[in-house]
Structure formats: C-alpha cells, structure tokens
Image (cartoon, rainbow, N blue to C red):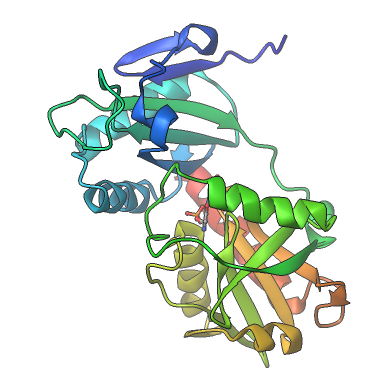
Amino acid sequence: MSSVPNIVFLNGQYLPVEEATVSVMDRGFLFGDGVYEVVPVFGKKLLRLGDHLQRLQNSLDRISCLNPHADAEWEAIFSDLLGKNPGEDRAVYLQISRGAYVKRDLTANAENPPTIFAMVLHVTPPDIDVVSAGISVITVDDFRWNACDIKSTSLVANVMLRQQATDASVDDAILVKNGAVTEGTASNVFIVKDSVLITPPTSRQLLPGITRDLVIEIAKNNTILIEVRDIRESELYSADEIWMTSSTREIAPVVKLNGEEVGSGVAGDMWKCMMNLYQQYKQELRRK
Ligand code: PDD
C-alpha cells in the first residue's frame, strides 16, 4: 500500500480513490465521450493554468458540451485537491464526460449533468542524465480523425499507434499523415535544422500543446530562430535534432529514428540550451 494519500475530486466531492465510483452508463465509459487536461504543478504552482483552461473550453465547445465551472472555480478545486495530495512535482488530471444517461443513446442531451473527475498525479522530476540519453522512435501512419485538436478521452487510436512503437521495441512513434509530420502519440514534435527550430502549425491534425507553445515562446525570447511550418517526413531523416514535447515528458530528445541515428546520435546542443531555459522557467515559477 502506498503511504501517499490519494484523494480525488468527483462531482463536487473529495473522496479516497477507492470510494470514487462512476456509473457503467457513463458516456465516458460507453463512448469515450469526454475531454481532459493534464496540468503540470511545480511546488504549488500550476503551469500555464489559463492556457490549459482555454484549451479545455475549446475542447468542450468542439463537442458541444457546457463548461460546468468558471475558471476561478476550477482554480479553487485544483488548489483544494493539491492541498489534500501534498507533494512537490505533480500534475492535475481533469476529465469531463457527458455524464450517465438512462439509455445507451448516441444523441447528446445538454440538460444531463456531466461527470467531473480530477486527480493528482505524482511526477518524478526528470533526471537530466536519463533524459539526455534520449529516446528511440519509429514513424507510423497517422490514421486518426480530423479532430485531433480536441483533447478527447477517445484515445484508442493513440493507444494503437503507441502499441506499434512497443511492438517495434522503441519508446514512441512520430505520426505522419500524407507525407507530413503531425505529432507524437502523446506529444508534439520539433526538429532542428541548421540551427533553426521547426514545428508544424496547429490544425485539426494535432493537439495544440501547451509545452509546444512554451518552447516556441522561450525560443523567441532567446533569439533562437523558429519556423512554424509543415515538416515533410523526409526532413526527419536529415534533421540535426528531433524533440518530442508534452506536459509529462517535457522536452525529450530523439536519438534514433527507424533504427538510424538522428544527427550525431546523441542529444543535441540546441536541446541542451532549450532544456536549461525550460528548467529555469520552472524554477522561476516555483519561486513566484
Ligand atoms: N498529452 N499531442 C497529444 C496527442 C497529446 O496527448 C499531448 C499531451 C500533447 C502535448 O500537449 P501538452 O504539451 O499540453 O501536454 C500533444 C498528455 C500529457 C497526456 O495525454 O497525458
């Protein structure tokens, strides 16, 4: 048994995880009919909470579901939940499903209350030596739908794509649609070519990552050249560096692609620079 308390939030109540239960008629369970967010927490500070709540609102709007709380209410819930689950580096996981209906019926009913669930994930701070060793990835065909900008809990396609990576004994996969890079199975993709950082533009083919935005902002503030444009699959093979970014992974350097070394086969100089700037940003947030 873990000694760390695990108090979760479910529909207005704070409960031990074992006591938090949801109906089998919940549309999240039956259809994956819901959206979610993962917000990193450093010390007591939520990273870019406003941006996460804005993305939550966009996801809810896209699936025509009302936001059950105002931003200030979400902030209060997260703060209470973090208070009940002490720790240093953590993340808040929030999921909103369209709730439980009496009948299994695809038709949505705006009157029905949603199911609101949040929990705290305990995160091990990245060990710089482990992270610098880098990850190996393969490219796979991105067969997902034209609504990947929604942070939807319907993740079976992502699970299948990650399984292709697992079957190939690598860490992750870079998804390619019609010859262009979209994203990772749970992260965004950057490449570095001739000291220019490049990432695909937001579209319905990928999730607008909050870490992606932060990396772009840090690059701009530190006179690192950045281009937001499509990346052809062929450019991956001649890239000096490839990175994958997410709230939980932060910035992971890719050192092997489809069995071949990326650049010099080790985490690159631009990655080291960005990783330092990112860690500084986190430290400043903690001190605020
Ligand atoms: N996933 N693309 C996809 C498909 C993702 O699932 C994620 C994050 C990202 C990066 O977004 P952000 O930088 O805001 O974390 C991009 C989260 C971490 C998850 O599913 O656990």
